[in-house]
Length: 374
Ligand code: KG4
Ligand code: ZN
Image 1 (tube, protein in one colour):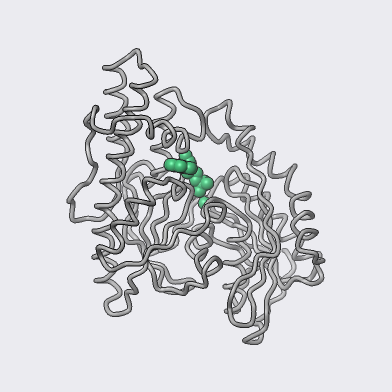
Image 2 (tube, rainbow, N blue to C red; image 1 turned 90 degrees about the horizontal axis):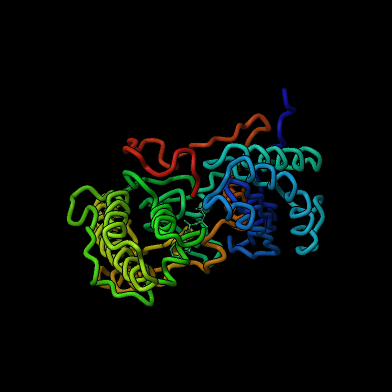
């Protein structure tokens, strides 16, 4: 039996300093964030070490390699985060660690280390849902408070969520098959491009003609708000084999056609999601669209949403890309937001490969990679 974790409900208005650990996929990260007396966030340090080089030869993330790398890297990264923030463990108020969803080996490493640090320093533990950390990031980057509509697009997840409050999320839409980042990665793979595929597809598509190959627009006009990308990827494969052997220009044209189809489909789905969000929250539905996850780096996605949002009366927020992709600051911030509300966790908390933010949402066939993370 682990000893009980200290529980605290901080006095309102007291600044809180939290150490955050992130190990759910292929970034090993630690950060120190302060939530000040007014509830604003200040990043004191944010150390992220990508494992992309270790996974690149396999054209994807290998869970066993990821877990081992987290184990090797995390102690030095935590030490660096504390040193850069110029604080000691005695000065922090809590340790936050990602407890899910994600690759179970990495989660075990990060959560166990978070528990060990908290136990050794006599501090409370906050077991953070990685999706909640993405969802709350605009509070850290621009002081934005819920409610807002969140489009989360990463290698593991593609969701539209109504963020009603800290701890209150309603899933509006999800993918019925591949996540958007996964579709980019698979498209890159079948065109013989590198890993991760998103940036490669985006780079090539700038040189391509989006009209030469005709690809389907998945889910366009459907009343349910969900996403689907598997059919699009298959259509790219068929067009690619029909045109084989592919010249550089063929590959660029296919990338451009893929991106054009994705943007039309995503814009249509977000439009449908906006209507449902407004129905769900009624008068409380602030017209605010937030984008998070690695695919938020895509410039064509940003410009599609930049033109869609104002046309529906929405303001658009895309956090700086370093905070859209996986990082420790978002975990520390989510931890601080929970701690401020007295929400801490026991040392017996187990990591969870699957951990939906909206537990009431009905599962949809597929919904992204099995056991994958956002
Ligand atoms: O959130 P993230 O850093 O990691 C997880 O998936 O957890 O997202 C990575 C995903 C990958 O699938 C990558 O291909 C995609 O984001 N991505 C992009 C771009 N940059 C990264 N997709 C499209 N365009 C980009 N510029
Ligand atoms: Zn993520």
